[in-house]
Image (cartoon, rainbow, N blue to C red):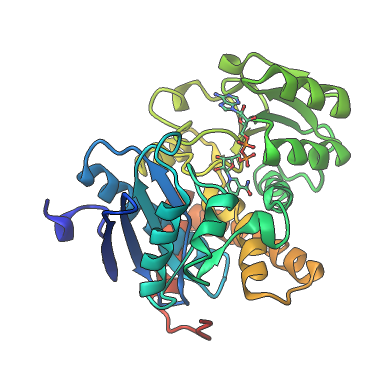
Length: 350
Ligand code: NAI
């Protein structure tokens, strides 16, 4: 495997393979950048078929965290870890403690957290071996409402930019996924007068939102193609792809889901279709803003809210620059993130 030549490698500072035979732990930690602070990003547990697949995933996710943290103006760089294994069968306290020792051996260059396949309970086992772990569920609560607030403010900014409307009264929004983020978001949108169309694979989740916020239920397979002002993906990644984009009729796509674009080129396809896309890692940063403040301790709720309120201005800057340069918004966001990473850090917080 030519790791340095992989497309995903993209200038990573450090990649570490960890192995503990007695605990059955095989993990990779990738540190993309510590230019702005210690590399922060979650630990994913997944039954990768090959090491090459695990490597490509950890590198892609790690770079993504660099961009996300840089754009949220957090004192963190970007990193990510993957544990190779089936989270339904292979989890033990010893495995996560061994992973904690691996994290600790990096002396604070990488800070881990829960991710797909890992939980806050797993992170407390990690915490037995290292202090470089943030467990949001334990430290101060669920980040989903904070993510929802950022997405709501981001939708307002996109509606103002694309539709010239100062509020959401009568604006139609289709929300895909009514979990922690989607449900809170529906509350904020409804309170602002938006008309909601919702879908979720769990009927109970739809029922709750339908009753509470007078949302209209739409079959899951029809939601993406609704003729609405805003399409708001809050469920899965890769929903914006070469098959779905030609079917979209929304004027704006702005939602919480991570990695909404199947490929970078899909951003250009949205631009060509006249659809304004709010780059996912910029609009969904409310959760990471809240978690990172908790990790450093001492930040008031008001400070966290103030940081989240900076999201709409950041998006508007991206929208304006994309229009000026006639480029896709995801390209502009990536470029802005890279510009921030190449500037010297204001303060390194260990
Ligand atoms: P969640 O797991 O609580 O909710 C996801 C919801 O989507 C579930 O109700 C699920 O039934 C539904 N769903 C799954 N497949 C679907 C489909 N094909 N069509 C319609 N609905 C479907 O997750 P959460 O926390 O609400 O996050 C939503 C998205 O936002 C995820 O992509 C997540 O990675 C991302 N995100 C979440 C953050 C947070 O603070 N929780 C922070 C940043 C991003």
